[in-house]
Length: 346
Picture 1 (spheres, rainbow, N blue to C red):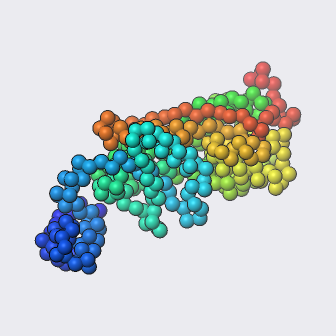
Picture 2: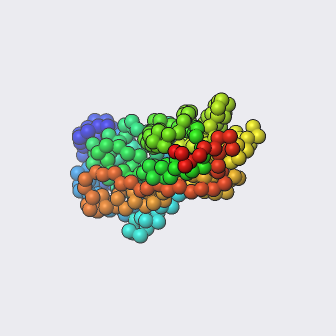
Picture 3: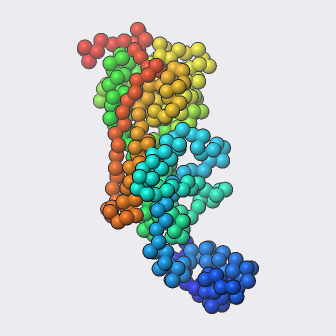
């Protein structure tokens, strides 16, 4: 970042006079297209906005929110069930308040986009940002430059955040496991570089201890592939768990695939509980028992909070939490007979 860029620094960078900079950026017909392009590139690289232009922009509002989603080289972003639900919640609420939504991929090639500049140029009024690593340096830039933004499904100190609260849904799941006679649970963690993975891991460990379960934890990264290989490790143990909980539905789909490949019957041999309750959970076979993550509601609340920030109604950063729930389907049931416990003696 080049703090405090001036007309003089732009002129020096472009190799032209200061008056040429003024004419080029004001659209003067006296300036050739080649010179105009050179000046504009210099101004963009220095994040320079002319004083008169800045004054005009400060009074202008686009009534447009930017929904920032990650760019993946290996898979289209919206082929993952999470992002259409996030977009639906954002657009539905934004339209009620008279705002439109622009989708912004966070990278162009291998380079992160300059998110503050998008707001400064008034392409959008603020940013709704999803899926960030815990130590993402871009948050510091957004905070330093006083850019209106809200984090969705992430929590960072001194920022506006909207996230789910894993505890209610996970507590219901653990209580259900006890009622079904399970004693040993396997848990597949998510990618610990992300806030949600750490929270789900911590709540699982605390709740399993509170309810007196024996448990084993395997590493994962929220992906179906990681669920598949973690299931192999858990199910080759002796004794193996009678129930597996995962940090995402995608990991749970990997467990389902592993069990199909190895002739392990769900739920009679092993019960399975996912996390998210996205569309695939209801139509796979067996349908997936899972913790309901209110993604659509989180997105709508994020949009509400961002619009209130833009309109000056919210000033002090805070974290908003929406409770999770629990949905029982075909992938879970009673522990195998040899593992049943007399719950009345617990």
